[in-house]
Each structure stands twice: as structure tokens, then as C-alpha cells.
Amino acid sequence: MAGQHTLSETESAVRGRLGDLELDFEAMSVVSNLFRAANAVRNHLERTVLARSDLTWTAFVVLWVTWIWEPIETRQIAAEGGFSKATLSGVMTTLEKRGLITRERDTTDGRLVIVNLTPAGRKLMKRLFPEFNAQERQVTQHLGNREKQAAAQALREMIRGVEREDATQPPPPMRG
Amino acid sequence: MAGQHTLSETESAVRGRLGDLELDFEAMSVVSNLFRAANAVRNHLERTVLARSDLTWTAFVVLWVTWIWEPIETRQIAAEGGFSKATLSGVMTTLEKRGLITRERDTTDGRLVIVNLTPAGRKLMKRLFPEFNAQERQVTQHLGNREKQAAAQALREMIRGVEREDATQPPPPMRG
DNA sequence: CACTAATCGTTAGGGCCCAAATTATCGGAC
DNA sequence: GTCCGATAATTTGGGCCCTAACGATTAGTG
Image (cartoon, rainbow over all chains, first blue to last red; front, side, top):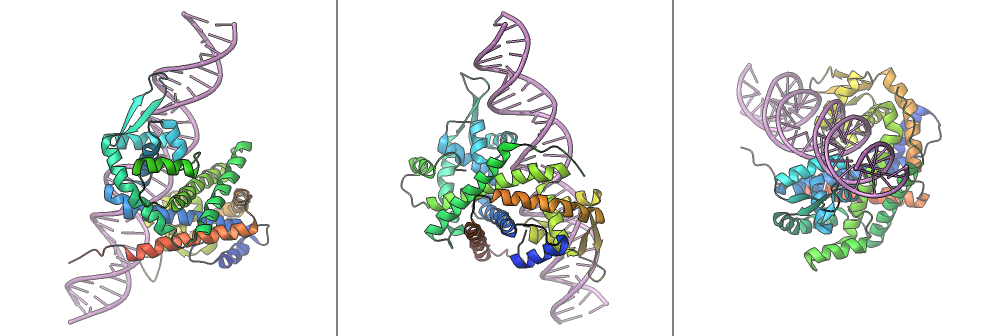
């Protein structure tokens, strides 16, 4: 959101719209940069690594999670990847058609679906992940070791800040 | 990606797949947490603040950018919001139908489209942004002031790490 | 004046993404 | 055994999101 503009430019622009309400501009800056960074990194990795193998971001995440933890249940992939099971269903259908994963019903619990990579899927990941990780290193190249750990920690704190809040109460619908 | 599992659990699982290749697990952790955090925060804000006004994340970003910088050109909204002009076209059509923004061609340069909020759009943002910012504060509640600034800085460094890389990489399209 | 290249916004097509509804299964209580 | 509530995955419907192609406009060149 606040992109080429500095924080204080944006801050004074907002004050011009809202007056001197109690606003947390530091929080705004963190959240804003969080999304700029996530978008930028995602687009970069899609273009540099994933596009050559005709994979989307989410498809890669599904493959990665499955690669590491297979055999794995559908719901675990969704939780690990951070997207809904509905999204996962569609993506897995695509990956199954391309012969990269297999789906089979669990024999002891008929509700579950167990996911595995095919040999082709494993071969792809073995080639792809080192390339992917090399770009992850590029993306974080300007951070020192200490800074990387601090960043990872701060991001975890934000996840915690959200999950704690979500557990409390869902708001009543009110549109306008 | 690495969610309920610790970094060292994931690290040893990856080593089991790839052996002792040169991998940057710290970078992996930062990128992984970046996306978990972005997803979590986005979903949280959509549910707590945006859903009540029947707005998607991107629609809100478009309104916000326009609110702060109007009158503003289409391409600037896209750059500021971090998505493609194609995406923006669709979202703006939705917002225009709902009577929250207006589009008009620039009189001096017929290629440009100038975007403004309607009075209803401005009223909505004046109500919505304080709620949104309150949640931004919630999300960052576990970060100290110093930590917030460090986080925002680290995220900017990652954006820089990407943009620098993107500027060097793209193979020039040979035309003619 | 053409002619050409560059730029802007839109549209087309394919894929992701979510909530809600749906189908199927399981587990416990009777 | 039969209900009933909980759980798992999928489908549905609407919206976002990208790249590539397109039409319109502008700017630069001779």
C-alpha cells in the first residue's frame, strides 16, 4: 500500500483525511510492508523458478508439503500450506491430471484422503527445490544472520497476534 | 509452509530428501513465515473488518490508495497496490457498479483514466479505515516499538532483494 | 504528412481462492 | 441396530489474479 511514498508522506496524507484520530502508523507500516514483500517475493519466485515448470505458487507449496511429509492427509496439507481445503481440492485435481501426485482413500477411515507424490513428482521436486531455495537466499540477501532470525521471529509474533484474536469472537454482519 | 513443525524438524526432513546439498534454511524459514503471516493477517482483516462491508482485500486496497491520493491514474493505483493493471480493471468495474469510485478519461492524454472516490466511497473509508487500523495494531500487538521498526525495515530489505534481482535477470525479448 | 514504436487500459482465458452447501463417513448415545 | 452430531473432502458460485493479446492513443522519426 504505502509504496514509493515514505511513511511520513502517507501519514500526513491520512491525517488530512481523518484529522488527529488515534492511529497506529507504525502498525500500518508493518502490515503494508508485509504485503508488499509477500507479493514481490511471490511474483519473483513464480517468474524465476516456477514458470519454467509451469507451476503456480500454490501448486508448488502443495508439492513441497507433500514431498516432505508424505504420506499425508488432505487436511494436513491445507493447514500446513495455509489455504482452505476447497482451494486444495482444485489444485490437487490439476496436479493429479499432470501425474505429479496420487490420491487414495484411507482404508481405516473412509472420510480421509491420503496424498503421495508420484515418481515424476519426486523427481521434479528434487530438481526444483534447490533452485527455489537459491532464490530464497537471493531474496534475503540483504539481511544479516541475526536480522533473518529477528525477521522470522517478528513474523511468527504477527501470526500469534492474529490467531489469538481470531479465537475470541466472530463479529456480527452489518453491511453498508 | 513450515507451520506447526519446527525449523529443525523441517530441516532434517528436507535433508532426508536431498542429502547434504548447500541449502539456506534460515532463508527458507524467513520466506515461509512471510507467507504464513501475510495469509493469516489478510484472512483475519477480511473476516473482522472487510466482510461486514462486503469488501475483498484488493477492493479495500484500491479504495484506500484512491482515498489517500485522489485524483489518481489507474497505473498508479496498480503500482501502489502491488497488483497488475488487469486485476485492477476488474476490481474497479465492481467498485464502480457499487457507486464507490468514478472513472473518467484524461482530457489531455486520451490513454489515461483518472479515478476518484464518490462521496459514498469517501464516507465508507472514513468509517472503515480506523477499524482497519485498530486491527493492524492488534496484529502487531506482540511487537515492541523497536521490533516493529526492525520488522518493517527487514521487509523493505526483502523487497529490495527482489527488485534488484528482477532488474538484472529478465532476458531481453528479441523483437524484430 | 505518414510510419513506427511505445504506452495505457481493457478483455480473454485459465487458474486460484474462499465460504457455504453437499455428500459421505464415523463415533457415540440410546 | 438406529439415530444424531461431528468430521472430511468435494462441488458450487462469485470474485480475484496473472499473462498475453487487443484496440486506442500518443510520441518520435524522417
